[in-house]
Image: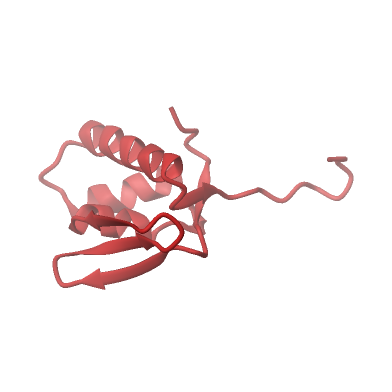
Length: 102
């Protein structure tokens, strides 16, 4: 399970093409093409390193009010985990305070 404060960034080598009803991710190294439904597209677009998981879930819950928040949390968590395994996204590194050593 992902931590609620985790932030995610898109892998720079992945080509993202948004469409009217969803979008596509393409990895030129593996030649894998992945379709994203509208919810998946919204989640992927939030993988900019600025939105922690909890904020992403809140945003998606706000867009899709007819889906229970527990279901949104579970689905977003599972989707992000799949994107991580396929190397379409990565966990963003958080900055450490200057006095803290690596």
